[in-house]
Image 1 (cartoon, rainbow, N blue to C red):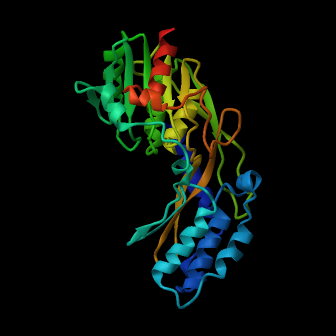
Image 2: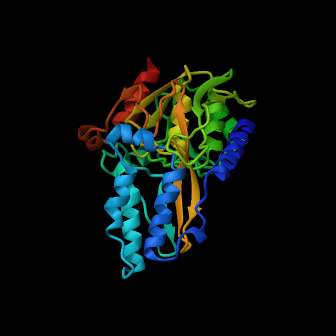
Image 3: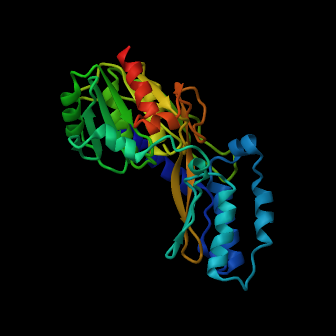
Length: 337
């Protein structure tokens, strides 16, 4: 965790050295705010090169495309809509424009894909006597497989909670950790939970920092190491269940677990979100959030557009009609072998 805070401090320092967009540089007019937003992204966003490679993103062409829609006679709502549309060209769920009345967002990273998750089926597997430790709901399934559902990495989970969960599930033949529909939160919890599944330090990925205004201005890759927890650690097999709504810190958790020999990822490709978010302000006071610090898996590949599971499994209509979750059942069979 000390390593994480060192990297965050380095990120803040690096961003401070990038040419800033001060309110004095642009007038508080529709055109001024538009140009300020475009320049903040141009100098600080971290995935331009990657997204140009993936789908031909040209940020200069994006500027010209949306600049013609800006007029000094437009309303605040109209300006917000145009600027939100421009940001959506980045296809990044970490990129948002916020004002008092609204919050722009790009949700196609999961809305255009099958859900592969059902609240009604979740309730069926948890039943009514499941236990709750901080943000984690857990139970023992009837084949002696432990099952944990973690809905959000914004829900604080402490070491004491994890000790209790492992202690109560320690006689199970295997463990399922279900993070489907978990859109992220605090990276501290992702690291804290993953640390319960290794007995030695493991290289899980890399991180870079933005060092200048150019699209390719980055530091060298810094290693991300997962250190084993000082508390109780799980020593058996574990399956991590995923779908397209797994994002940001949850995506990082899957990245950590995929690097561990005891873990198997089951379900759908995750939604991604591999950029550490940062914020800037416009002359009119609106706040823009954006990906500023790229993170990679242990092979040096970005996970911005998601992580492939070890076993690709989808929820079927037939199983749903029978009250069965195809993905959970696949993981149970895998752990029972």
